[in-house]
Length: 111
Length: 114
Image (cartoon, rainbow over all chains, first blue to last red; front, side, top):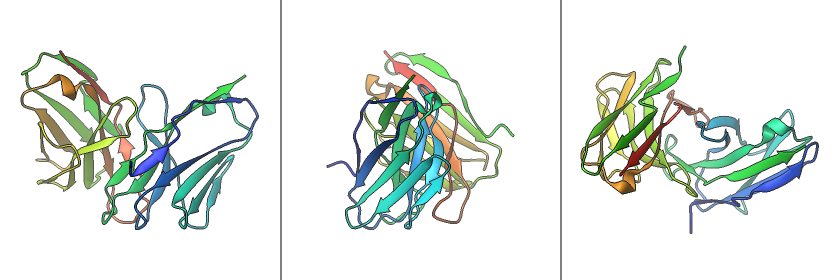
């Protein structure tokens, strides 16, 4: 079993719709959680950290469910520019500076 | 600030050749990382460094060596390239302290080994 698992997609979503995807992780001791965004043939960039109580940044909402060991990302009022691959990231067991990366969920927003 | 830069951007090697990838950051970050990214897989950590003069192995270190002689530079070496090392290589850096510190990435090096 992969340590961080994501649905690879692609999720094809019309512009303006709401889309959500989850990521599961296997290490119950993980403390740090992130969503990164990666555009085609570009480097990953931090979208948002995920806090225990959940957090929101504009149209993006991230949630953490420790009991079920998953994090989620919700995008409201999706834009064409949201088309990208979204990478789920958690810290490696016993380390606060080594990260484990999911393979990503590809999102395509259609006009 | 240039952030994190990588050279070269593209390279084609023949099996058995050697090369060095250079990563440089101007953010005075202590931690630096080398990852590889292959289709259908997450980023995998090759080697990392928590400060000048220190390096450590990640999850896929075989076939690679690194050096961090200066705080701002992190070099990744392939002594005898193999086709299995065809990949996109990303360098990243982050500052110390805290659990939620962002890793900043360079633009990547696309390496093909024939």
